[in-house]
Every structure is written in structure tokens, then in C-alpha cells.
Length: 192
Image (cartoon, rainbow, N blue to C red; front, side, top):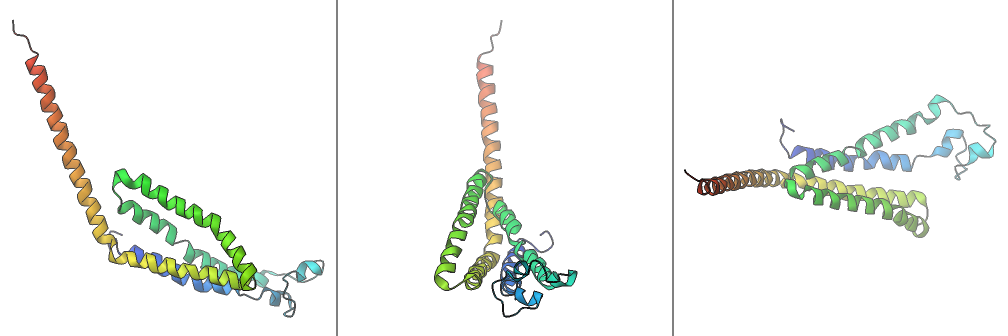
């Protein structure tokens, strides 16, 4: 951040969200039925239907495991960067409201997301298609995060100037209060 400035975390965040779509789509569309040697069975229950007779080794889930690690690594970058950017572009007395709004929409997505995906599963012909469409929303997320590249530097400068102005106003008010208190105490002095 100190070396490259405030603009490049937005590129990392947006790029990671968009790039995370690829391994996530690979994981969603991975043919797990081919792991157990039965490519014709598409219900995904063949291991348990055989009473566990299929041989599962370390290498069985190696490829999907690597895909999952890459997908998780790419998708996990965006959240912390968004929160730190929000903190840097919000005045201190407004941060509570800004983070409350962020958490409200985050929770709203967590609550409505499963309902929306369930609706897509029912109306679009299956889980795979519904999850593929759902992951496409990460592209919009990535585009919006990347667009911060254009504005974040100006926003941070406005916050810096606002904080400096608030500090100067506070200093003026404190010196005014000190002067008023000293005048009052000087007027109340009784000389004998």
C-alpha cells in the first residue's frame, strides 16, 4: 500500500474476484462421477450406493482439492481489501454508519443468496447451471471493485483534508473555550 498507493489494492481485489470465477466454474463442473470409474452415473451417489466398495485413494480428490484451494484463495482476497478501502475513504465519525451499511448488504446477500440459487435450480434446470450463473455475479463484483481504481485516491485525499479540517476546528474551539474560561475566572477575581 505504501509502495504502490491506494489504487492498486482495488485492481487486486477486482482481478481476484474475476479470476476466481475460473477455478470455481472448474470445481462446479468437475465430473466427480469419473473419480469412481462410473462416468454414466450422474447422481453422485455411486460410492455410497455400492456400500463404499469403490476405492478412494489420496489421488482421487487431488485435482478437485487443488482447484478448491485456488478458488478459495482467489475469492478470499476481496473482502479484507473492501473493508480496508472503506475505512480509508470514510470520515471517522461516519465509519460506523458505513460499516453498518456494508454489513447489512453483506448479510442481505447471505440471506437472499440461497433463496435465489434455489429458485434458479428449480427454474433453470439443475444445480450446475444455477451455480454457474451465480458465480457469474462475481464478475460484476470484480468490475465494481476495479472501478474503485479511478476514484479511491481522490476519496482518500478528501478524507485526509476533512480530518485535518476537523482537527483544526477542534483546536480553534478548544482555544476559544480556554480563553472564555480564563476571562470568566479573571473577572471573578477579588482584589483586597
